[in-house]
Image 1 (cartoon, rainbow, N blue to C red):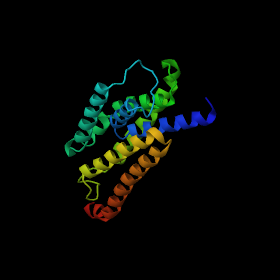
Image 2 (cartoon, one colour):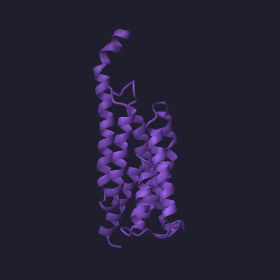
Image 3 (spheres, rainbow, N blue to C red):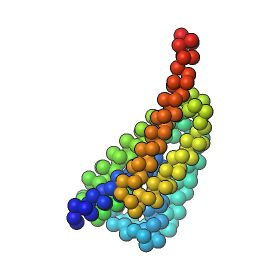
Image 4 (spheres, rainbow, N blue to C red):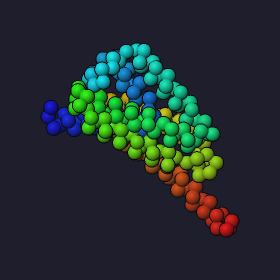
Length: 195
């Protein structure tokens, strides 16, 4: 494998692992679907056979994750509860894209993918504004829908274009940060009056 091929494969892995930090099951379902449709070839890392049953199960989990993320009462607890699932998803996607083919050779990819997904997941939970407190009038459902768009678009682009999903994820995190910052400036003077 040449240096350019290694860089491209690492870029695909980084991109999909970052998307896994936003939604755990969406990029896995998309990756499995594209493999079954013949667009990509998945290496046999963990001995799992990708079939329509697995893709449908991952799709059902993706829908469940998307629905639960929109429940205001579960925010931010649901985000923290999903971190381990996002870590596993990021690990599998990075190792799959890097395509070493053997479990021992996949260990660095698994570790890198898990670390990227955990970093994005934790930043997402910390930076995502809470409805009613620091969201500047933006609802939990809207913020969650933005994450859905980034996950689907990033999951599709991440299979074919290295590093592009990182830009989408970075924009999402930056957007969350700006909303929190704007809300803090808007109501900063009121906090002084309350003291």
